[in-house]
Length: 168
Image (tube, rainbow, N blue to C red):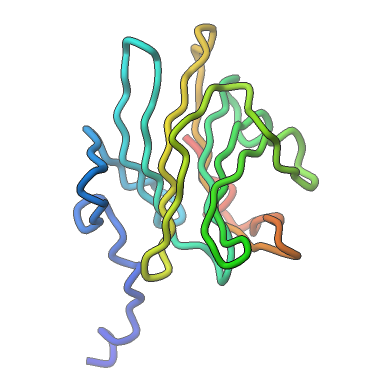
């Protein structure tokens, strides 16, 4: 009994147990190998777009982030969607990750995005949206993360192996 009460409700976060709103339907789901995150997705070959629902548990009052790097490699070059509470409401902002230093929100990314939103339920945040892969992108990678919010802005995530390996 004690063991059961110590298990976080988020430890069961996976494709099988996760319930998305009924108006959100995806063809595929993957339990990501790090940070206990999942990604539901549908790829449209006609217009090279990916519709996603990325879900993770943020650090205390923190953010969740998902993005694609159209040039391959890890974090630098990633076009990211970052969701966190701002003025008491959950929202999604766009970030072009150009360095390991501080990051700043941008108005648009180098990739086309649409239908962006986020919701929080029981401490779990899901980012919904669509991205279009550039015609020239042939080595695309994804990056996902969780981290703190400091002074109302996303701050550097932890540098634990789980964080550093959150890419594929």
